[in-house]
Length: 275
Image 1 (cartoon, rainbow, N blue to C red):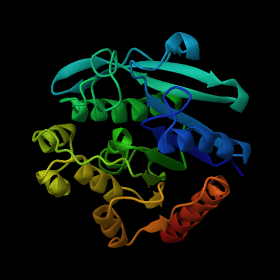
Image 2: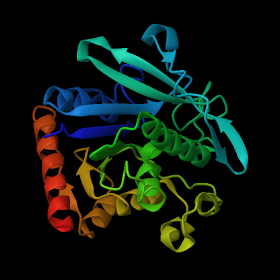
Image 3: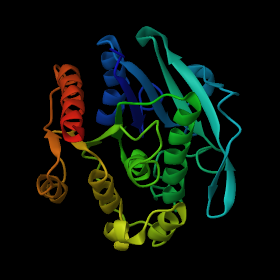
């Protein structure tokens, strides 16, 4: 039997960024899953705050060089990689001068959300998916963490559903207490329609906000994991209203084994539904 393949797509990973609940899980979960005999790939954006020299990032020439089109503009995709030697684990970085160079995660040095965060999330999601296609690596599980990764489930379900690499992938999204409550650019729907998604599938974005885009990601995921002890009540109510496999919050002592078992369960359920 082939090893299970798990693709991790995260907004933030330590030690490249400061320690947060999300960055710690995104660091140690892939290692733990790999140590349990699974094959992994891990992706995050290459923000300007990631120190390339200290973390020994280098460009992967064979994966770079593609242009991704957003709003009829070509944006070069640069792929970099670094190794966490103690974990025997590689992390791939999605880079672009317009969207990530000299940029923080979602908020600038003045505490304001970047006005082009939607474009940045589109670029990141497309960059991850197209790079995995170049690697010719078909993930059984795609596990997404953070708002910056929230369009990955949407694109996989709506645009890449018939791609041989992803047609059998099960998508899991982890939900965290990141407190994002701001509105988003009103052009969000139009940008996704331009990408090829039908407007009727984007009803949540008639009120464009970080919260509603997370709900859209949940709608397009096969399963949900609660990554924080407490999450916003209306988001929890929304999750509980859906008929989706749900894993409640797990403490840091045991979550890796429980997540691993949850991956097995999701794949088994998918097999049952297929048969």
